[in-house]
Length: 384
Image 1: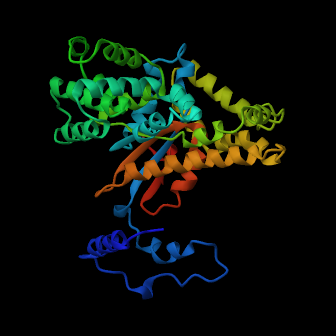
Image 2: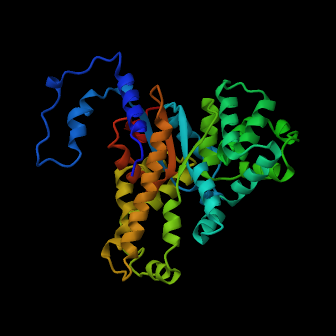
Image 3: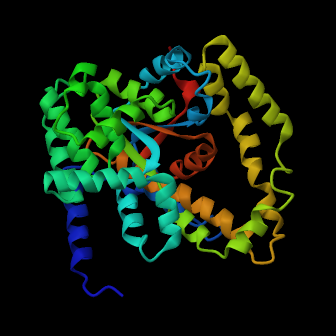
């Protein structure tokens, strides 16, 4: 129950003020009023959608990717060069990545003492980030939020030409803010000599940064090089594992029963899966992964990829965990979408590139397509 209507009144005033200076579209030019038989939510299409112009929307390109850490043995920078050249034509102003949002890391860290599922997920996805962040907070004498504000203030007041000392300060602030990926971007801007001379960082954090810079995952090999080419200063984390906390809180025996279902993996579209494997191997053999990414972001690939969820729709699990697991998968994509909308929100239209595992793309495209504040762009629409 809301204890006061004042915040709502303030929002109304803000909305009213934002409308000042714009000429309202006469109601007579809008579409006809929705009929009772129309789908729920069509009032938005009738009243607001006609007012949307390209200048009102940010563009979002969701790039489905293979998890490149699995391809370490055969992946080279040359393999990704044509893809990076194509993505540069989109000229993204912001890049979002499939990594846990710092606020979610903080939430897992807060819950882990009394929540084994939160502790398990933190071990899987962010233990080293939180450990390094807490150590850096002690060095700086700042809490996480203060460090985040310091980092944003430092990077926001400067252009691409940032002095090495300021970049190192930004690295320290970002690590303390649990934003290791943006710290990695700043670290990658530094020359090898400047990195070696970074005496202000604790030795274990220095070693962690160097080690991560050698990773083959798509954040390091794809997002970072593109961000540097474009002179961007931040990477935006949009992933969530809130669904994982809920899923892992279910009884272990019930979860084991669910994931041992023989139907799992047996209801895949094998023909499309074979086609995807063939395209991948050919792309690596040719030394150019652009054809692979065009395929992975195509309707054909998505039809095959979503077939991995077929087994959950049989409702064979006596505990109902199949329907629960699928709802949690939808929840994860919904939370990713809210983070993407947050990244795209700006006083000017942004161009946001979202780099996520290919299984997320059909869900994110579907959810983002309903939002008036963004307009979707597809990889195959970009021209060299």
